[in-house]
Length: 412
Image (cartoon, rainbow, N blue to C red; front, side, top):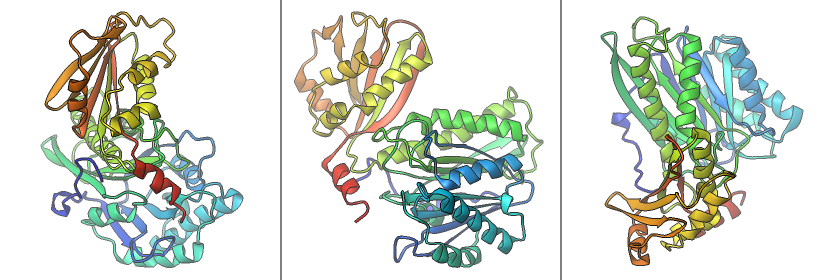
């Protein structure tokens, strides 16, 4: 039921020199599907990451933070079907044991491995099956396996999510390829999502961290499906340095700006794919708030609208009960907001109509126009606060009957 989202074409997913991926059927939760992925990185690769802000973060998140601090990452291992969250000391031990087992196969230090898990919370990892699957994933390592890996990291996703872009830096063609997973338990500050973006550019480690944070804020931290922040969300950016360009060290250089745009563009496309594949989604909604006194207040209002179950259910029904948007705007916590100056528009790719101004319904607005616009699967809510120049955009989806069914049956 994904909204205007298609399975990626494997031919269009460009291998990144210095990255190999392998998948295997470990039977961690699912049968007859790949659920274990290994990513091997060339020596000298740089890796940066951002993670969930949920205080009940999963064991692999804690281990990833520890290992990233030591640097020199050479491999990633991802299992689906089990989050290894809410598993206490045993979960930490299992995450570290996974790193150790893969490190022994690769003849590297366990601290050079990053572990990732996604799936059901509060259940122990089936370590015997996971460890048995690692040699099979290693035997499958290929540079052109992004398509298979994107499928192997799925949980309730209905469609795999992976994209590629290319840019030219210093006369060298740079490849950027990424994949993500996620469909529910999605909200800002990362979500039940995993995102991996790799490029073959040479980038200074400190600059890669800047690129990662900026890309995350513009993409995965600007989406919400249901307002639940997961225990496991992780976004990793990799630079293998295999392209042969002069190392980028200046954030203000032309090369840095071009590469940052490409990395962020890939991250945004992957993040939007998660919303388009939101559990039971039938509408993809862009919430744009402009004319704010600060970026933060624009984001606060956008999130209030995007999180509102009353707004989301109205959009599912194509019901122009748009007073719900004004209500969400009003409770977003902007104490000095002048509602008399605020204006609200509803639109789709074909038309837009002014809904509210001067504290009430716009004179020319009709519910017939609102209902007509809302039947489109791609919708935009635009709010002008008329109090400054700041703006922000959040992407979300509607709530359908299937969202409840999917989450009610998730452990069945």
